[in-house]
Image (cartoon, rainbow over all chains, first blue to last red; front, side):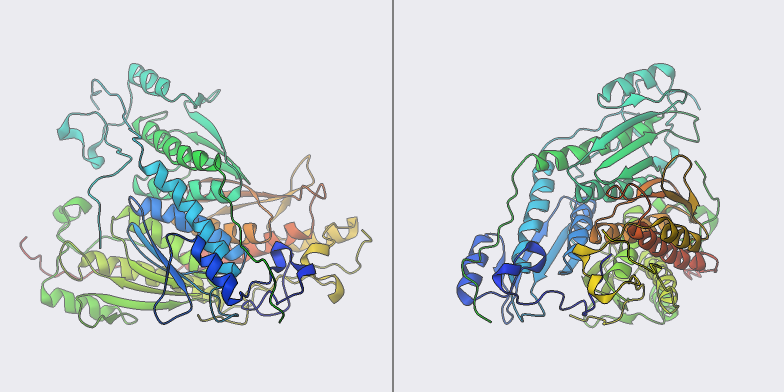
Length: 142
Length: 142
Length: 142
Length: 142
């Protein structure tokens, strides 16, 4: 039962390193940290004119895209960090930034890596043949 | 809006083409059809005392289970065939039967195969390491 | 399985009964039909430069917004008509158009009205006080 | 990003403020606390043979039930407290207990009250007529 008495938008503070469990990650980056972390995200790119990163995910269909979004929604709510995302059918365009810190933070890197992981699984699945065949050799008269 | 013309999971039955529209689908099985189709579902078993089949899916965590359920929910609503399912954390126990026909029908086979496909992708994903690491070598003094 | 025989949101068009099956639905509008139908949507507006309509929904929080989106996703998949939508936290911006007909069609009107209905319920709910209080008069020593 | 500073469902426990942090929350009940808190849940009943409570929610259709489940899933993941729930079409049977404490705890009360709030909104919505009518006075020849 948990409810922080502070507002939703600033649940975590810049805490000393002794407080640095996942739940209290000091997520503001130095410029060097930002560069190093963003460089790891091979499929994400900088957003022009904003301190933000974005990636466009393309799935096979809406079913796959929605599965991805549903899983991501749980994480977003859990870590109180919600993406800006646009969906139409099989595409999901995601922009990540952290309002509190005014730019890309450790929370965005965490979210980006998790979304990469979620989509990799679904996309790998898509590459395989999953035939769905129901054998009805003769149709029973109704 | 992009629309792919192919669908990975093809729900079409092996029926004469004239019978392939969903609304006129003769999805009741003869006993032989039922036996043959259920035999294809290696991971499903008969439910004692009911004309129904069931499978227990076990995922890594709730996130994965919910991703599976969210995707299945779309198919269930689309084909108007809703599973009986029980979830707690990472497990999803599914029972399939068709009320209209009083037992396992082609719709159940379609749903079972689709669920197998959805979960296979997620479970294969689970077997891999998806490290989520944020590099903060030194904490900037605030 | 219990099935209610009524549906709150009835997507049937006012068409001759012979045209009411979804697969043969003639959902392209004449200009007069388009104007009349769009005029009914008090909270939607025309999109500049496109034959499309849009509405921005604002909810209390992500939980409410996601509940709305999840419900809409089922309808979208069911009628094979998927919105262009953008979400961040409590806002959902929706654009509706029909690719096949090159503009606003009966399917968009159906979707818009359903989304209005889904959000009305959630927003009406939001207006009420739903106090959640757990009484622990004395804390048990752990 | 818009962020509202208020939350509709306020799940704060009546605890000394010093005990309100998530990690140190003593959510196990004394027998008196358990009795008092469960008594508030008018629509929930004790589970025979288990220290658990249950409620059966009945919605209009799967769409409404799934909207409820999707919203609940976010809370469950957020507070790391997942219900045992069974769904078929419009019904959702929920059993709540806390594994760590071996019985009903403050977390279950929080979850039960939140689920009551989520369903109340949807069910109130269901009671109203939300006609969806698309005016097509004359059908355009295709």
